[in-house]
Image (cartoon, rainbow, N blue to C red; front, side, top):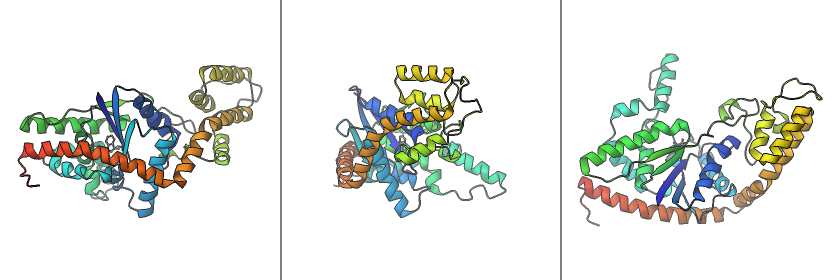
Length: 332
Ligand code: TRP
């Protein structure tokens, strides 16, 4: 059985780009009985940027409730928090000794910050903490600790998986086969979703639709979708944001019927109303579940507690092997 692992940073409110790009495909994967899935909340990765007690706390529940409300079945997926698996941090310390510093200098996130500093005429490491610099090592530890075979990630994380593979190979070459080499699983969908203004849906563009926006807010956002100046009775091109979103939520038949209406000519106002109805029907049950879980966090705690226990079982075995390999004396 192949092991799949992925981590989610609790750094913000999940939007439809996250849903269709990452959450939905990962949940689909977990329904395949050839895989055992470990999905976790990377709270110590978030700490590089989220340095506010309430935010980290709230975003952590937000991510847990989001994945559960989107259909993650805790009987099929081991859902846990990184911070509940302390072996991660031991492995991270060990692996830092097998990670060339030059490799970290070339990591995209760090490099981009350095370049921005240089452009701004600042010291090259201005505002960069060691958490960011060592981020790929911690991520490598997450992955190798649980012996992941496949890691579903967005294309922006591909380099991190390559780093994990490199570090695992260095270690294996020195101490014999200790780690399996992980492979990235890049969902083609990732990043393809359009936002309100027709550009990629992204927090940095301010064009996102939160998955669990309440009905009134959802309606408002749908009404804000940018359209062209085609008159109400004129045929519409299908290259528009409303149709692109509609296709994601509707069945093939629904999308076909909607395309015909657009091509015959309906007003953008009507088109938006139809999109809203479809989206709201799809999202309402998820929203209800999300709100229920947020109000019953003890349910979420129990799921995370069970998940952490299972993750730690694997982690303990890995650490035992690694300690033995490197020659750490075990007296306990
Ligand atoms: N770096 C990932 C991101 O920003 C989150 C992450 C942390 C992760 N550890 C991981 C993803 C391990 C996959 C595997 O999206």
